Every structure is written in C-alpha cells, then in structure tokens.
Length: 376
Image (cartoon, rainbow, N blue to C red; front, side, top):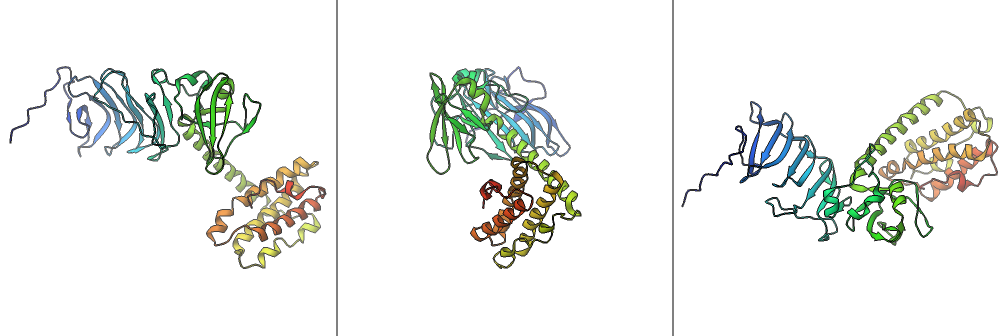
C-alpha cells in the first residue's frame, strides 16, 4: 500500500489557513476552547487558493448567519442564511460560466429542470425546503438577478421577465389582477400554485394550478406583473411573517374586545333573555365547552352592535362577518373534539344570527349575506 502524497499548499493562502477536512478545502478562522468554530471563517479553493467562501458560526460551532460560496472565478456558487445550524431564508445555487470544481445539480419538485436554468433560488423555513417556491434564472438573470424592495417583494418584476425560465413560481400579492384578455383574476388560495409559463407579445403567461380542479392560464402585461405579482422565492418568508404578525395583532385585538365587553350586559330586552344555540346544547354531538365559545361570540356580537349603533347594512354586516370568521376559527377545535360544524349546527347558528340582526332593526337582510364568510 502506497503512502498518499502530501497535499500541496497554495502559496497565496493566509498564514493561518489549514486543510479543513469537513469542508474539503482550506479554511481560516477562530475556534473556542472546545475546538468549535466560531465567528467568521474564510475558505479557499484546494489548488488555486482563490477565495471559495465565507461562513458565520455561533458559539456552538453551528452555521449561523450568512453563508456565501463562489466558484474559483468569483461567480456565485451557493449562498443562504442559517439560524443556529438550520437553513432558514432564501438559498441560491448557480452554475459557473466556465468549468468549475463546484458543480451544481439542479433538482426541482417537478423532477424536470430546463437546460436554460443557470441559477435556482429556493426558500427554506426552519430547515424545510419549500420546493414549490423556486425561481429559475437564465444566464441574464444569474448575472443580474431581480432586486427585492424593503417589504421583500420583487422590485419591477415586469421589466425582468426576460431573466426568468419557465416554471418559476410566483405569488399574487394583490386581491385582484387584470389580464390582457380583460379577465379579472382573484387572488387564489394558498394551495394554488402560480407559475410563470413564458413570455408573450403582451407580457407573460401565468398558469394558476389548484390542488384540485382545472388549471387556467392568463396573460398579464409587464406593468400588471409588477403591480400584482412577486417571485415566490423572494416573498414567501416575508409573506408568512406578515401573516403571522397579522394573526398576532388580530388575536391581541380580539382579546381586548373580549375584555372590553365581558362585564357589559346586553341592553336589548329580547336578546338579553334569548336562549342561544338551543339545538346545539341539546345535542350530545356538540361538546358544551365548545358551544359555549360560539355563544360567547354571539353574545359579544350583540354588545358590539349596541356599542357601534350601525346605521346601515354595510356597518352591521362588518360586525356579523367578524363574528362569523371567529366561529370559522373554531372548526379545528370541534374536529379535535370529535365533532363538526355541519348541517345541524349551521341551521342553529344561522337562526341565531337572524334573530340578532332582526332584534337590532335589520330584519330585511338575507341570512346568507349576514354570514357570508362562513366555512360551515
């Protein structure tokens, strides 16, 4: 058995660089007393000694913060952000324009990647790859990827459509978008994939592919793409963070409303003595503790109507819709309790909503309008 030759050290390496077996390249950085990497580490290519990457580590030797690697010619190889060893944020991988020891094998959830793809961006959430939220760039886009604004949205998406490769995933950020065919397209639910399908004489083609049902394709102008859409890989985390912040704010507002009206009695004589949800309390299928939660929502609705004194239908519908959405949020609790807000519950709740609006002088309202946002 022969002895392996000693690895030749490039002459241009920093004096404190040594061979890093874990990264399989030269590295230079600090270690703590336990031997853990900490702070900023710089890495260098094996043969040339050219800069290969910069990685940040926490006090336990885990990647924490930005990680950025380049090909020997300085072009991006891969980059992303870690949180205490967990990938979190947008990661990018890029092919080199010349042969490189840092090869990239692009893999997508669809299993098929166009040969035109030079760079791929994909977000990670707490270590989980979001493989249905990827941006595919051609060489033009790899050299000059689209910027993001301060809110995480893609800046001027419409002017950069020529940098994208088919099957790039988009998010629709506005409630409505208008296609060049004159169709008003509503923002789809989170289970619908919105996919760039190539350029068009009037802008670009966008495919809306729901989890169930028929996919549909529309053409949007560049201006409308900039207004109503963003690259999913750019905006997904910001979108989720905004949703989480909104949910937190709504929960705080709801708690404040509950506290505000807790001790106030109902003034309307009819509703003060009304027996709410009789049909649900008398049915063992519905747990009393959960029915109590719906009753509390309806009682508070009466108090809010009395406090707001709505003068028109839109004003009272805003209150009934908010109460309806609160009941929607209880659906999982009922499922966990072996129950369901099904036909019998729907009829009982609709009857009580009808009694409430009638008691406050809005008896002409259609009950379906009163509870329009219902999921039950």
